[in-house]
Length: 133
Image (cartoon, rainbow, N blue to C red; front, side, top):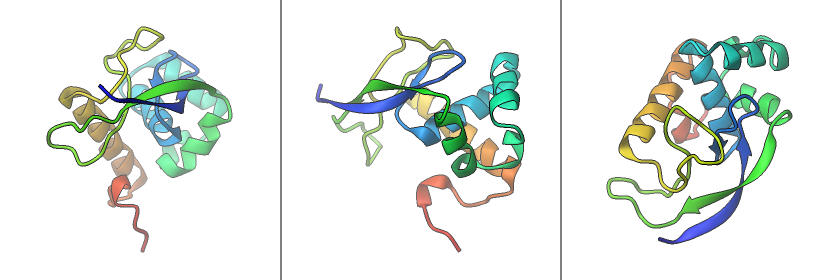
């Protein structure tokens, strides 16, 4: 397995390690909108109005309060994906969270979180396209 060291972020609520600011914003928002009171309370306190913005608005607001961590990115190609992406998996975060490429279930959850964020903000452009009108 080829791993590349990279700086990521630790969730300030549950210590889940994520590869970048956008993933941290999506993680916090997804946990909050799915009923995690600790994540919702943290967002209400540190990023008031978080629910009315999108990932790009929320990301710099949450990373200002997040610890940077070493994050290993699996550079080995994953079947069905044209990019390498690292991340923890599972609902429980922390130092023991799995590192490396996201499995299919984790990738599906992240995609659902991003879709929920787009629906909440009225943004119908998938974040991965990166195009603006």
